[in-house]
Length: 219
Image 1 (cartoon, rainbow, N blue to C red):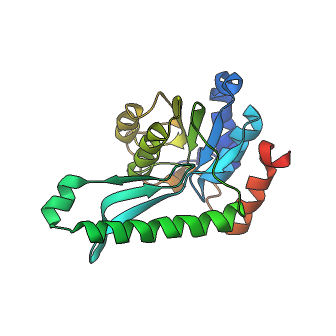
Image 2: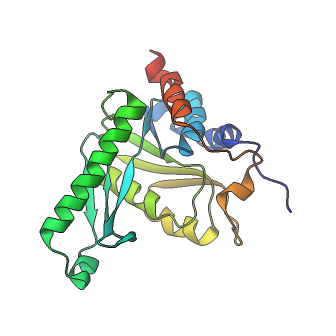
Image 3: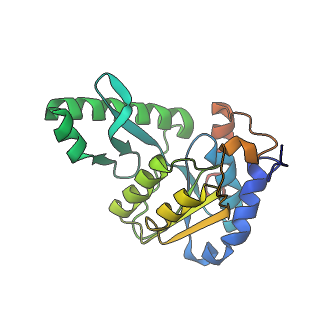
């Protein structure tokens, strides 16, 4: 078995921060996908003296096929909704189902934001540079929705920063943002956890603690 690339998520975040230093003067916002993206994002936020917030994305599943995404909803200062109209028409889904399913996922997003952010409102990205961070990418479906949502929300510059992703996925995602930063893009990927010595699950309590340690929350 090959040697892991990173000791843990914090080390991966520090490596990414070195590649993002040119953005410091742009007063960026770091948006981490919970939970694994938060320790990566915290290191970037500390290095860039930038606020850290969450990027909460929920898939809207088809009836009786929850893994089949007919769309997604995204948390933010203005919540965004994306629906695959071609798939909806093919499945013959009524507008009422789409609305009810979307509302369920938005409620789950609100529940998670309340759990993690303790009542803090999402940071407004309008007119700002937004850096989307995760601990690794496999298919890129969730990240793609997040990047598009930031465009819709008015971010002037959208940057993706991820330690590792398959080469083909990385190439696809570059067209979805202004800049994409990766440490590694292997042709043969496996799984995200293969690239870490320590890839233990991040707890809810750790997410809360890290959000409080980020620059803006420290006051």
